[in-house]
Length: 396
Length: 184
Ligand SMILES: [Fe+2]
Image 1 (cartoon, rainbow over the protein chains, first blue to last red):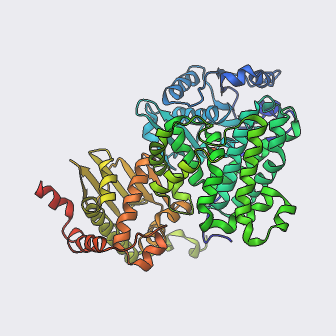
Image 2 (image 1 turned 180 degrees about the horizontal axis):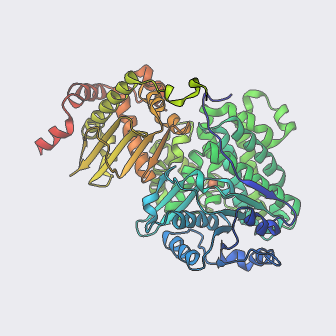
Image 3 (image 1 turned 135 degrees about the vertical axis):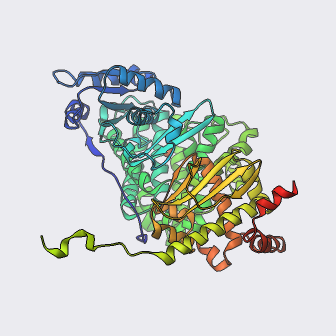
């Protein structure tokens, strides 16, 4: 069904496939830039991925003007300001985000600071408040899940005030996203699984949230089918280039879907829990996805029924009576969770994730203040959030 | 150039009726929020968590109707219709978008989903404000409208009927925040 009104925006040029990273200097030049600052982290450097990026500049007019290698897993305002200083000192003219969600989000936030020239990032917090065109920005993801390379969001922690500041603006979208199978080959199995389930959650929620539209739907279902066919292979056989590349594409598709359709209760739960107990985002989504689907079942069951096709494939879909498909879709996600747990020890209960029992109330309170609640098809109360968190604690 | 193509021939038609309705809706909502913050337990708990002092503005871009709310010394007050620099601002992109919401054709979640509103300020405080607006709207709207704009409508108990009567009878015409301050 087509909504009576919707908006869709994805202006990101996608450069994907064999040796794609070597096109980085060319793409920068196309944007009128020659002195990029690269924002990355120690994990990326240690895996030799930064070297691959550096090698791409051999024999090119564009030069690596500066590289920031120390992005922490949860980026903060201090880090952003430090990187912005590096940018100015080295007379950079563009930004490259190389890494997982944190490095790419940091790069986005740095872009805001160097463009708007503000002293305090908090003044620009909000949705769609940035007016100026930002500096040329290219994203190279090294995980397959966050979809940051095609989303308009950046989340940065303000450690002093103890809050997470979300920035959403169309200007934050990268000009180019580069997907190179070499960039995700070395990702460890558990991170592969967790980030892959983050992408799965993006796609499932994008398909069922109130902002869904025909374009986001098409991206979401395509992403789910790719994850169904490739996630386990990527986890069990990390060197499988085809599976890795498929997951990178699935992540981008799911990112484009949720950037335009938003996410719902599952992400609100993951954000709530992440803020209270520091459970990694992908792990929290893995745990909550089947429970969030179950919670929404009476409101959007038909949509979950439709998702059974990409989730479980033709045989299962056509052999399941229509009325049973929604519940079967939830079961398909649970089944994938169990298999991932067996393959690499991915936590699929809060207990396995090491969440203390006495933190559940605090997490449930935080859920309600998350913007994702707005877009969930069903109202979420404190009691709802608490009962989901409790149910997810030890369901095995 | 053809005389007919001169652009000054084209003047936007004034939308006086809609502008008035939105102004009235903003006033109603402002006073209802002020009253709910005194009378409704959930709204009171939400407002208690906001910064103090804090200024909130609802504004129709770029020169449309405006509503300002002020929280001072723990009390929330409707503070008129003149635009100010606020800590938290909710923008409606244009008059038609605001009208869809204030005429009860669409709730705030749907308004967000259709990109009809945007936000400046702390998103988690905005969530709390939106919960309060939902509470106020549940008192303001008759059930057949509330059902369309709210994701869930609380059942009408005797107590809620009393609060509704107080909001409509005293809160909207007089302003309950003012009274609450006098009582202190
Ligand atoms: Fe996510």
